[in-house]
Image (tube, rainbow, N blue to C red; front, side, top):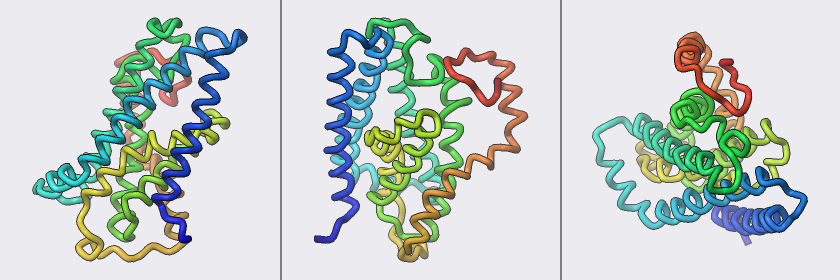
Length: 249
């Protein structure tokens, strides 16, 4: 049987469910885990429920009407892809920042347990997350203009990029298959909404193009270097409070 992208996504879903269930049970039932660790698990479960389970289900069920609406917007498809993916990334961060701010409800305190760099939404997206995702979306608009990756392949490839990015901050994150869904859902609907391959002059990708589709987004944030002085100025002006180190500190 030929293994397709759909099979891989289903396998990741089963794997993620098993891993998350085991970790959640072991942590929440443990007397050795402190209240902050348990709060982080609850935050992660909240993210999975609202972004992956509910959000992902809605995206799959409504992808056809949403894709039609997006295609009818009179803008270049590359611009629409970037804006759509950015909007979804902002929505995902709204969920994660909300979870971080619910630390007291989960038995901890804000700043002691968190799944975002800051409890302030604007600080998080402007200095830590979406600001980095934006060049990645630009990179994918370039890739989709040249190669005919289908939406499920885009989901998996960007999910891999996100997993590798998370691993750079915490190596054990590579074992959390759910990162594929956290990141993949940012680009799945936008990828469903682009024109067919013949209208984009996109060719069938070869193996090296799949590798390129991982490497290019990972290195794409370097295009932010010209904006570094402006971001540093805004960082100093806003004086954000972060729970982790910031490149602008």
